[in-house]
Image (cartoon, rainbow, N blue to C red):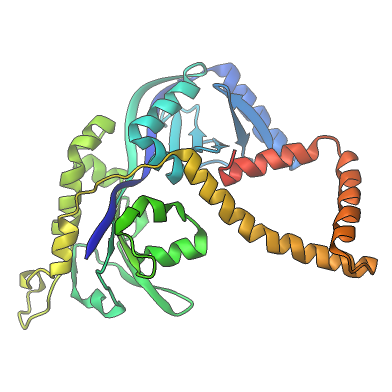
Length: 347
């Protein structure tokens, strides 16, 4: 059993303060224009380009998407003025302090940020050689009253404990290898380093700490989070959830600790980092691999319509028609390409 990686995998920060009235008005205008004309608007903040969503972000009135993450904005005094969730890639490349510093940098002209609050943190540890199966759900001792076996196309992929709507603590133990194959994230292969064996399943043990439990554990801002991460992991893996070896004792909490879980409890949470440019390169390569077959299939259909069996001829004729189509629509292609690149986190 080998630990490959661990640390903070998701971070949401909220900031109380105020927003410049003129910027709030420009946000409102951009959101309304996006709604009315069904064309995503872009907006500059701190020299960075964001897209303005026609919808809100939870209770935050405005949602701004950027290649590095999502910012929610609210002018209401009762709510944080900014809610910031960096993309996992940006978080792994820059670390919690780095993503917080970036946010303060882009908002310093239009916002006054007075108090920082950690709204959500996900801690994880990744292992090979741990070997879970669906029957192990009966051997967990947990404070949660909700346990679920997760499947993908009838194939067992892991467990879930707790419900998000509780606003406290939830846990997932799942096949991270299968998730990467289905959803992407191949940069983890490099993050896991030399200990990673490609043909062996990687199991992720992950705990999601919502604001309610963070408050109880004394986590307010990033400084207090850094101090309490070891205690948070200990609470989650010792007090809240643990895997036991069944005995005849009717009191499950007296069952001996499973040796595999002792390894989980002892996780070093050793955070790995990787340059963002390298992460983007890996993601771009995967996206190209996924898109090329669609592009090739479209070329085949076009060839059939043209009665042309020469790929080079079909692509040449199709390119000319595509150019004429987009030329007639002004700079729409450039705008849409920029919006899509921001959505994919590629620019």
